[in-house]
Image 1: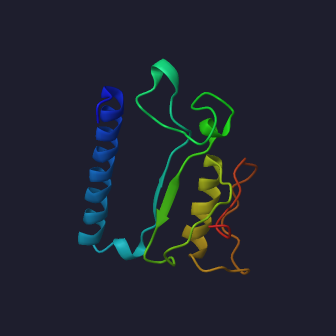
Image 2: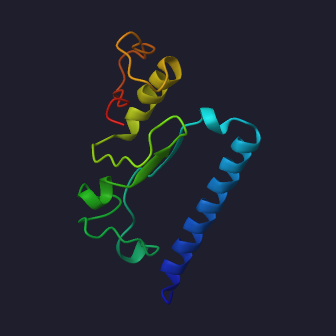
Length: 133
């Protein structure tokens, strides 16, 4: 890759990928992987202009520090042996939704249930999104 900034960004992404592999391997060796939900997400799109480290938000308009989709949408993935594979979800989920979603799963499990509502977290901004996931 010729562009120095892009090359640096790709190196950092590779380092994150390697670190995720270390975590997954440790969970498997400890016998914890079968009861793990692994979530990887970003809170915003990449930087643009002179501050960019080579990020590309195309085809989305804008980037970090903007209200365009390129600044507020990002990719993520969830993996767990407890979940069916191969599902692509295009629903919206906000970073504040993770707390009520994960506390619900911790209390109620991954299977849909009308009997279990999860803990009462009071008046918070997030919403349990487990049914959408």
